Length: 470
Image (cartoon, rainbow, N blue to C red; front, top):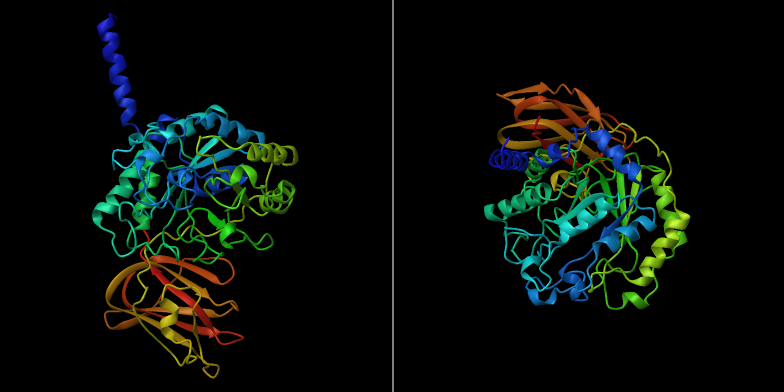
């Protein structure tokens, strides 16, 4: 074979490989979600890395119009980060690719406001991913939906914004090899107020799975959703610094808990001289007991403005590594319901009910707020609750979240073509107060719950109705 043919063959093969999805290029095979969830829990302990424009502003949320000239990091060394993680017996890293102020730290084609246009001018995501893989560590990425620089914020979401989100996620999951998990933030949280309707969760979820089927999707939404089910996430996630603590005794879902090594997520000028958290407490109060409760623990370590981890943090990580050794095997995650991914079509539709407590009327059971409830009046013997969609809509899942005193039994009916029909439920899933009911798709104008037996007046925090993709 002559040189010209060899060059043609190499060029053809290279071009072909670049068109193959990332996970296929890595030779991986698609795994089931329970397999991936167990593998994630088995990782045990990892490093969260908050690094970006806030690093240079002494803030956790930077000015969304911060000048690009601020980003310099003259001693940047992602290999130092990876070796520090290894010293603590961590198994993976997770880097903030874009935080809430909308500054991407990778070579993106979606905006000129990015790290490549700064004096630093290097692809941080690439250097991080290469360094962690070289050191035998898994690679995860963090991505914020909220983006104040580009106007991706409440009441202003446009189709162009949604396309930008899709394009950025596509870049991250195409150009940087195998990504074990994508941790998403700033989405349907009480403080971000961007709903799963504004930016459709199900569309983004299926995009991620189409790019990398083995990539777990994790949304940091525990501030809003009950702990008993996987609402809009493959892994239940708890931000302990925001007061979200997992129950070591009662948790039965694959979980993640996070905490910063110091008082903030991004580096502050005070960090080199301020004490870090007690390493014995981190290991013995959080990491080890959480590992025994199906929970992976991720500790945030913030590199400084030079692009290096400070000496006091490096010392703490080495001390952690002396105390913590990941067990050879961790508990098997109990069987649990599949994640809830679709938009809730019951949210804010017209509702009705039997006589209720005056201060807890029917509207509270479909107000998209799990902290409020519809409460049946104590004298009602056969309470009922009804949703009216006005016109026929398709759905194949109902999720009933009771109040703290769960235990009522329900029958369900749907109204179509002028008649009520019993709803035959194929799968009843869920733990505690959350009941997930999946069934063959129906078209209905109304849905009615009738309580059959209960020891105390029924309390319903939310009734969700979904048309789930099959």
